[in-house]
Length: 109
Image (cartoon, rainbow, N blue to C red; front, side, top):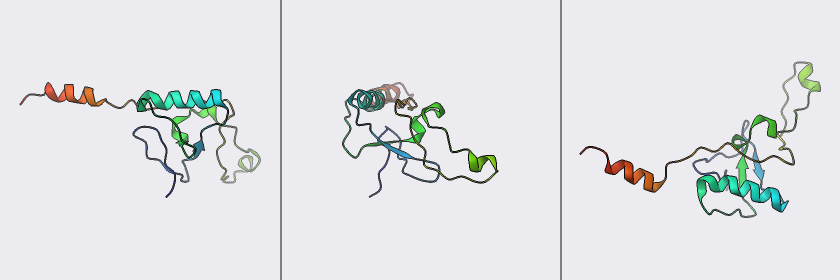
């Protein structure tokens, strides 16, 4: 079974435009990643197989692409690399169950 992104509401898997990244081994950085995921997944904790996709990182979180082939106009395929200090920050805020229930209560019958 292929790995999928653990962010709430995201089911991305590796493809031509999506890369997956394992949680860092550095405890402090791993905790920062975990806290970011918990913004939308409550008390969620990572497992050794947990991954986040490239959609949850801003462009400045990635190492620069190899430029030599690009300078000659050639198509370059390379694996995106997250900078060692990068922290994911792009997460869609999903409505809570309580918020949805309250919304349903206020709808006209």
